[in-house]
Image (tube, rainbow, N blue to C red; front, side, top):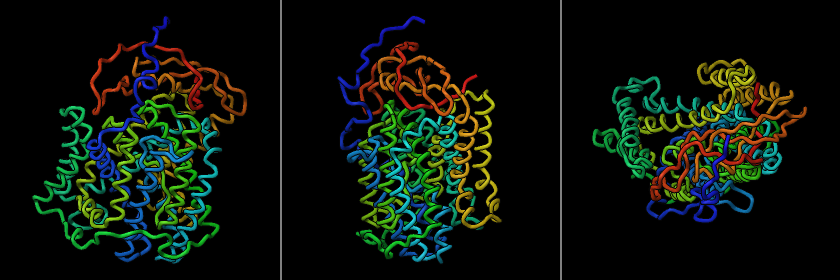
Length: 531
């Protein structure tokens, strides 16, 4: 096939900053950053609420956990997006408490007697796991070749699918209403459906700038309607203090016990895979190169954030998949938007009254917005799976069995009730179970055999502002024992050609489809089996 010369192949590097590194005006940074906070807020506070209720903490202790969580989320997000030394991916990734750790932490805390005594054992395991993650990050990043699209795509799809039930539960009124007549009330469902339809309408008929604020407008609009109908309670805002600081080791010095540490190390292994998938997903969305060093920096940020979580009375942190959907929907790629969001989180963590105001958003309104957000996370995973040849039986089995395993604790809650408590702490997480299944099956089917591989050419992704690439596949036979790709892979662009336009830039004409450049040797070694 004849090649068409590329036009302005270094447009981002010579003429302007890459959209990821673009610093937006203060007004837009404020709006987009606050939208990220609202999109992630419900998922951020649900972990301390679940853990606090399970360990029977008092109301004051629970509020303290929420404030500590928000404060640490803000610091961790700034570190991840802004970057410090070799820590932080410098990508628009929001840090939040991983859902993977919820069940293990509850089991650890209850096994230690519950209450603050249980928290101390949890924090000891969290700090140890964070240090291990930081130290292991550069080595894990070199193992990316053992996590091909079939694994990354499967894990991201599982994350989205297992989070959607939480959104649906909020849409029905929230977990606190389960078993009560108000759960699933038509009014709650109306708020959720109305919020979702409003978001879809804004995206459908709004201009790019307005569409990028669809989630924020949906949450504000849904809350406004609920307030007019008398279903929003702001009494907690009046009772909350204006200022509060989370101090290190508020509940006492952590306790370090062997089995809780082992359980948390397994959790962090899964979250490292989760973060790896999130980094590659955001790299494709933003058209920015992702390599082993990028992954290592992102994982170091996870480790630092997790250590800070244990010190400041919070929990393990991971690059939040929830906000990837928002980046995809808004098309705002600037990492400085996440820095602004981190600033908002710190403020919310220091001002309980401000946090209470955001917490006043009704659960059904949050649920309606979250359905679209969590669904987008699964969509990113499905998009990555589009690079996988699912006609190959091994790949199809990896996906099928992993999805089935992930659904066990989600669809059949008491499935593992007869398992030992330590084992149950790991298996009761659909993300953990499905992720481990995908990793192990890939090792069995694709790593310990001679398989062909393809890789992603990140040079072509970064230069797609000039033209849109046609997929060019080169399969190579690998030596036994590992992946050493010799050819290049340019994926079909599911997002359309990237130009400096977007919701915050000038519009520019799109180049014709079908131009193709020279495949390169860059990118992660994503081994994709071929016939």
